[in-house]
Amino acid sequence: MKTSTEFVAWFRSAAPYIRTFRGQTFVIAFDGDVIEEGNFTDLTHDINLLVSVGVKVVLVHGARPQIERSLKSKKLKSNFSNHQVRVTDEETLTCVKEANGRLRLEIEALLSMGLPNTPLAGSPIRVTSGNFVIAQPKGIINGVDMLYSGDVRKIRHEAIFQRLESGEMVLVSPLGYSATGEIFNLTHEDVATEVAIAIKANKLIYLCDQSGINDKQNNLLNELTTSEVKSLAKKRNKMPSIDRLWKGLIKASESGVDRLHLIDRKINGGILLELFTHEGIGTMISRDSLQAIRTATQDDIGGILSLIEPLEQNGVLVRRPRETLETEIQKFTVVEHDGLIVGCVALNPFKREKIGELACLAVHPDFQSTGVGERLLKVVEANCSKQKLIDVFVLTTQSSHWFLENGFKKTVLSELPKEKAKLYNYQRNSKIYSKPII
Ligand SMILES: CC(C)(COP(=O)(O)OP(=O)(O)OC[C@H]1O[C@@H](n2cnc3c(N)ncnc32)[C@H](O)[C@@H]1OP(=O)(O)O)[C@@H](O)C(=O)NCCC(=O)NCCS
Image (cartoon, rainbow, N blue to C red):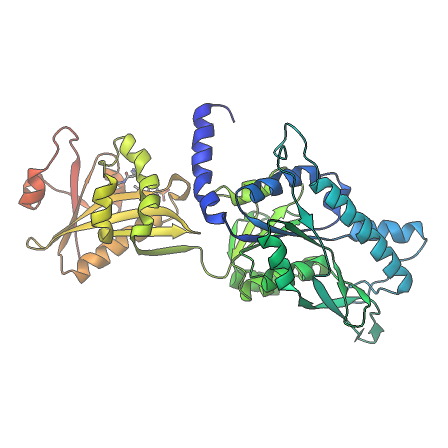
């Protein structure tokens, strides 16, 4: 970060996320490559930061590269069914147990570091693991006995809750125990999905080997709804591992997990960039569209103030103290994007003159030129129509052309309601535009 101003701006922009995430539960899933490639130390810093701001974290790890290495060292071959699921015989299961056991210890050790001069200083993470996953055998699929390859039968969610409530982070391996005491080999994608559903997680975050989901031109799609992911999945002929991941994402989303994120595991600080910035760096999936337009409530005052204050300081908008906002909040319409207020407008009706004033129109810089302004204007026009107003006017210093392009025409002070004309600020010298309501 180059200047203190940039730092302050960045820190302020992260504040609403910190507020929202406090007390939420995130499941973070990653394959064994993260450890293999040495990226886990950076990841522990980011996880530690999440825990410090009050997020309850469950980690689900995979162990594919470690299992492959263990099989190789014993000169055993990987055996996959025609669905690309590993067939786990007894010898393979020994390698699976060894690889997972060693990996779990390594992860626990890395999470227990308390390095000075890092975000871990003074706050070692308390991590716990256990028999949280009950499994059952996959059985015979298309004539192939999958032996010790299993499916998740149940997640012992109360046990996970207890650990999280006592301030611990929970680490889950892709192994499950059956009621008969056997161990089954599971995929970490399945385990992460089922854990997120069972504990009603707010987010399921996958660190994967791609930047997220791309369009046909290979551009990253930052936000998708579940139904968009479903229709993309139908069109695309995917690798089995990606197919498994996408199925898990869709299932988790449809079962109530609010947000799913795909993040490139190789980006240092990827989780922070995805979660604490508007634009993100991966793909975020949600059931419904993230943007909603609605009448403002008292709870939106903080969000509206942080949107309009920079514009008031630049003189673009007239200053509105918090008290005025509190008494006039019912006049405001807001656009909310993933819990943040990114656009607002107010309508002041002059009932006797049958004319309305559009005021305090503002769109967050990150969301400008995406049609938010136009949507807000349409709502104002619809509200004028409901209130039987025949014209809407606006006073503006810097957005004349935007209003002209949206059907407004220049008008004069004498056309305004007397009450409003009396208050005209000659120093601001705003231009006046109006538009008939049809
Ligand atoms: C004016 C404002 C509300 C427009 O919101 P928006 O969501 O970006 O608008 P839309 O997406 O509907 O329209 C975007 C188009 O308007 C143009 N535009 C945006 N602000 C403009 C301005 N001040 N003057 C002229 N054109 C403008 C954009 O270039 C874009 O054109 P393009 O599609 O050809 O690229 C927004 O720029 C803003 O908040 N400005 C600061 C506050 C302000 O001036 N409010 C009005 C005071 S009453």
